[in-house]
Length: 407
Image (cartoon, rainbow, N blue to C red; front, side, top):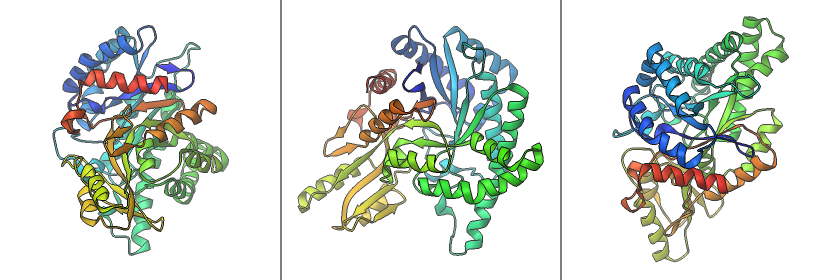
């Protein structure tokens, strides 16, 4: 859907299982026509496509890609963004920190991302003026920081240099694709808890300390550009994926995030509309234990559920997973925010709340001064939600999308 206030709006298909293209396409065929009829009967329906590495290899085969194009056209649907973060299995398997594997130190991550962009360049539709709409692929925050030992600055510099070099290989590919196809596409890095890039400040520091210095030198030489032209090209093709859940976990206010990016001339490629869990702890021991146990109900073994605790002094303590936070809980903790993509249309979960207010803030900022043209609802934890929160998948997606549209 192309909403005047929001831009292109869709939902991320990582909510559907299926790691092969055959299985994933079957899930799309089952869900999307009904959703299209309910949500956008008279206008094209936008999709945020998630492909595993295996599925991307299969979809790039000409017979599969042509068949998918025909299916999209016959159902009045279109793909405007892709989720290139999870490379391998994402459902019915233990994911945890392996969601970052392979990371941006590897050629496998580079080739997978290039393939997604080749597919997207074919799928992007043209608008009423005959121009292809912009497209983006979101990706991991370079790597998972807990895999590395940071005691030596040289080690840190090596990892950032290596990952940046691989990102620049994709940037060069995007520039060539634009020359060949007239498709403007951008790589959208998605900071998240314990990612190599976790906060707005870290994203900006990486961009200014590594990506631009290394990229301007290389891109200007490769494409015969001035330094200014090379910098503009990099900023056009590398952007931030603003996952609302992730920034809320880190207690970052949406308006402050956008102001920082604007100060450095950096852009948001897309917003992933998602919500985390949060709660303040009361002073009485019984109340504190009640809140703690409420968080414990969301402890499941599939995904990482990092926790950021706010202390009485205002410091932030980061825990790699919910069991770590539960074990370390003490009287110094006054608030927790937990990485669990809960349904966005629900604001309270008993004594726990969601970070829904951050979505409303983003929605208001977008309506006031549009800062991106791509918004994607991303709630993928339906299978692992507590039983009383599980609903039919099509009904659940419909409720998510309608909540965004009316708020």
